[in-house]
Length: 125
Image 1 (tube, one colour):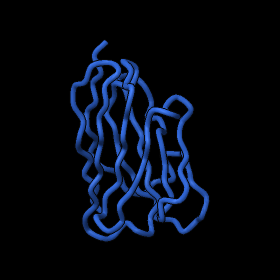
Image 2: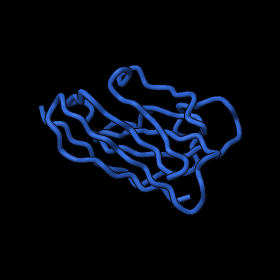
Image 3: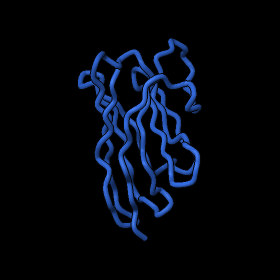
Image 4: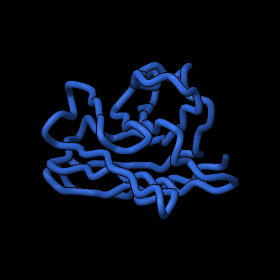
């Protein structure tokens, strides 16, 4: 599976962006998907994850109420709608796929098998 993240850019604080993760190579309909981010000098951190049918989601506390993860399995795509962006949201954002059949969602980066190349999000204060 190859993952291609896009949609990043420069946005003022309070603005919105929608990130897209397009998968190729095989269908991701059976994979749990996640978004992570990494700021300079910091470790990669979990943002959100979604079950393979999209019925269950989980978010990091610092994005609850601002970010929404969704998926369109017919288009082999996962989205991350980001609203009310803050300066501290500045980072490279990565999408990832978890191919395990386990039902439970995971927030651990090590549990994901495939990663996209990342897209830069810069929020100006």
